[in-house]
Length: 117
Image (cartoon, rainbow, N blue to C red):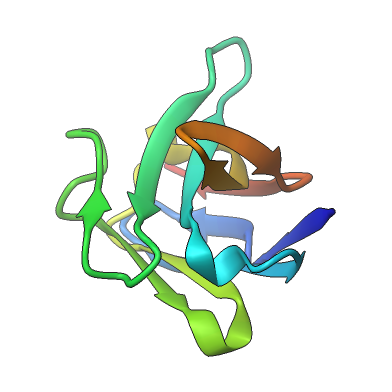
């Protein structure tokens, strides 16, 4: 069983920054790709970023590329999402995920990020 607990969300003004953290417990999460998704009200869930087990490979959609940075600390079983130059359209619930055998099988409970204009 894997548990993911997100922290670091909140309210920030446009142009500001937030850093999300996700602490994993249970199975050896350090062996798997971890990432983030988000879902805004009335919209579909959107991929935000992921990072492979070693931290040597990351991916982002164009909507956040250059503004968001994902990283991980395997000694702490924690993945981070540094979000800079935030925009109102980044407002969403952000979910931490673990990818196992090609599928995002484990999800956190989600944390709210609100960017005011």
